[in-house]
Amino acid sequence: MSDVRPYWVATAHQVAVRALGWLDAARDHFALPVDVASDRLRPNEDIKPLGELALTVSIAIREAAAGSREAQLAPALAAFAWAQFRDGDVLYELQREQPIETFPTETYAWFARTGHRHPRLDELVAHLSGLRAARVTEVVPNRTLAIYNAERLLGLPNRDDPAALTARTWLGGTPEPWAIDFFTLYAVTHAVFHLTDWAARPDDLPPHLQTYLHAWLPAWLEVYLEAGHWDLVGELLIVDLCLTEPDDYPNAWEALARAQQPDGLLPTGPERVPTDAAQAFREHYHPTIVAAIAGTLAVSRRIGAQATR
Amino acid sequence: MPVISGPPRAVYATAVETLAGSVVRALTGADDAFQLAGQLVAEGSPAECRARLAAVRVLGPDALAPFALAGHQFGPEDAEVVETGSQMFPTSERDPDATDDADNTVLVRALRDWATGEVLTRLGVAGSARAYPARRGASVGPDQGWLAWGGVLAQLSPLATPGLDGPLHADARRYRLDVARGVTRAMLRRDYLTAARLARWLASGGEVTMDPPFAVEPVLRQLELVAGADPRLQLEIAIARYGLGGGAGE
Image (cartoon, rainbow over all chains, first blue to last red):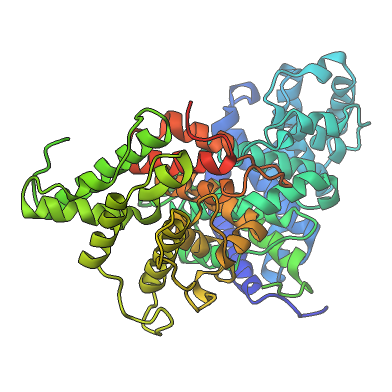
């Protein structure tokens, strides 16, 4: 393996290792509540963190570029999350009870990437995705790309035109870069994540959108670096890594590493992290997920890359 | 004329705002008459008199915009005000190339004085021209990165006036994207004065097609509608509109 890598990749690697270590230590907080029926689980509080853990480790396994510690942790965490979902039964029950909800399928797709399949859920999802109803799900535009990517990962026929879906997103409109806000930036990051399947398919991001992101990502990143909003900074760094030719932002990586706690938790923003572990988890698990994904992708995509600046 | 009072710093700020407001009204056609001679009227405290002349120095070439851009009659008494202001607040004798000018203060001032000299020359004041500051300017150029360069360009917005051209203007045309990034950042930070100053650089050569697209006029309009009534901000916008070719009148 070539070891020609930009110097900041070592920093990114450290961020990823620490973040993954924190996620592993936080297993109990990711665990689904015991003795609660599937239809009583709360999508945002219960399902989403565990699903995002599955996403994170699915990317770590896919990239296979991390060190030995991650190579050991990632499959173990994937197995843990799958077991929490009772080998897919929970997702199957959720999807069966709420046929036009998309989050069970989207969550399942991360597991499919790591080889965890549930035959009855596969059958159900294949059927549901073929309905006319599936073509007109009432969600914001970047979410249609999430569904598109989930179906792609599950090996279902592509029934939607990604170009048409993309054109309806904020990013697809290439708007004035100053006419954006905090929440819409998340819409932009997620449009990129889904379209490129989290940096696996950079070339699926059309050239004019790559040009647009090369132009304005530096300005957006600078604003939120200054504000110390690490969750969004991390997501914007992932966006860079989803481009065919990432620009690399060494200063942002150094800032992110400085913001990360020794135990690996990356704070959401400049606010103080609560001492109560459960509260700290609720408020800061997401940026730590982001840090793990960003660092993992930085290592895998920039190994062998020449430092460009 | 508003009453000027309070501590010296506030007196100066008020004087600058008052003059900026007059320039804006002249540029937008709200006032038919404009002259600088009033800045010399011996009215109010000595501090206030000094402040009125300081305001002419602070606005530099922008104080002359009504004459240079909007067709107001420039007379000897206006020239006298500029001259008196220059004498009272002389340009530093320090060499802009001096190594201790780390924050570019001297160089920025020299460039603004160069711009004032250029405008005065166009208005027919003999002997006003100054040499362009010799240092082509590693530290006022884009090689320091878009973020730092934007800070310098914002300080130098009086140079971004229709009719003025120089190495910095060439850089601003060539590295237009860097300037647009600065506008974007300033808009998102709600730093509207900086946004207007950088937009003025983009506007100084007229609207230019960019890839990706970045139109200047919507930035100016947005600033007009949301940025508040600060006369210095309105002045930046008004001159930017002349750069776009439409004049500042509504």
